[in-house]
Length: 235
Image 1 (cartoon, rainbow, N blue to C red):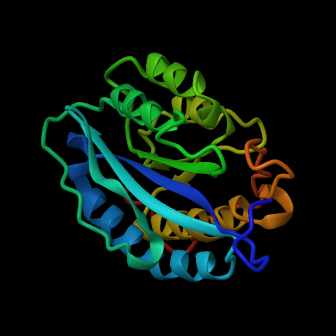
Image 2 (image 1 turned 180 degrees about the vertical axis):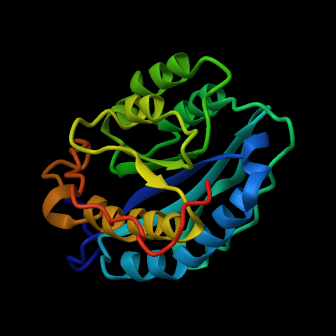
């Protein structure tokens, strides 16, 4: 285990990356506004979760996809200094999810990923079906060592989200896509990912390897928050 002078445990980088759908359907019924509000609300909770574990340095980035994909926040930003920048959805835009995954796969290589990093947390949020080659994009990620070791979580916004595709992204038989059919549920899901999953991914008992060059597998929490029963579904 790497240490700083004097024996203090050195923190290991944990990359947390949101992949956000900004297609035309996200302009309907306030979905993109609700997504922006949900992530912004989750940031303080995420900061608190990260501060409880000095062994991990949480670094946040964001990709958005519609007609193609691009980095919305490209530089790995320390969670302590992270500030959310609102996403914008484009009317009539496509859902190039495969392109987003291929773009992300380039960041799963070593370098730019550090050999001694903790497995990255990848959070895919979508309300529809991919309009490009999703399978090729997912294959690109799985070709990379850190892609295979990543914690992959998916949030399905509304009833039209392609849960089969999201399940393939997760690649974990015991974890299903998290459903969010109203703004309150979306807040719950993103807050859960930003706290419970983050804590699990950065936990020393599960993550600190005896070799600084050996990635380790993350135990994904199996208990997820229930839907908000008192709020009518709007998506």
